[in-house]
Length: 398
Image (cartoon, rainbow, N blue to C red; front, top):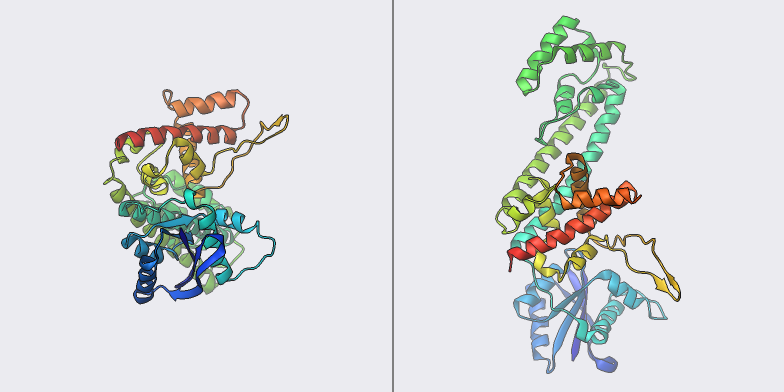
């Protein structure tokens, strides 16, 4: 047996080739992620006169060029979780951290765990695209929250209280009533310089143009709020207008990007067999269904429902020592935080719509009746939901 340990970094890697009992086939050396040097590595591996297994850590996107190139030539490649490798490296008494030392540790890991190594299998390209789109969607959601907070801060200076008056209830993420209104009236002075009748007419015309309800009562409330409000910054300051309008512009651009990403996710997800099954599950709508599929990926890569639960990081590992057995255990949180967040949104949705015949919703009610906290009941419900998800989606591919 020959273990090829590859310590992957950005645009280059360090390779070490070992045999059992520490016999060095090739001392650690560097290669760049170019076709010529990767071809030389493949030729060297093919020339070795024993069974060869390549071992590397999962390093975000850095290891993908090496992985795909080696896979193309049919070479056994095991991709190891970085946490597992860190635990393995921690047993060494004398510490040290260099790329060469890391490649030796990775090669030794391959020899010590030879019969437990699993040949990496690439997911279908659709799942890869969905995962990438899903992660970018989550990234832009965070940006949207930050941008919304930034706009709220600016409005506290120029239009205190206006946010609660103009709540957005549109199903379209790119349509935001507060943004549209602030773009037209960015300071209370722009409202109070008109008479009440003039503002009511202007508000109705604006609402008709933007597709909102033409409510005279709402216009009167906004005018009264503008009259009584105390802006802390003057409308004569040009930088204030620029900051408010830029905050609106950034938020609008992020909303457009989110809508575009979501449409791409939905289009890809609908091409998969499991989409209809997932869409029909309780608490899952047109927006959450593709996000859920994107984060879980191909269900066939999980050997059981327990594996899917562990991937989500909501498993509670047992704790027992001697006569003591732990009963108050916490979830591990060693898994996909994005999947946990998406699952928690589904549980909140179930709690709001209250479907009487939904097994997951009834299970959450049962846990709450037992005295469990609301969040604990939701996590328990998510555990049951993922087991059902695994069973139903697996049935599609049988």
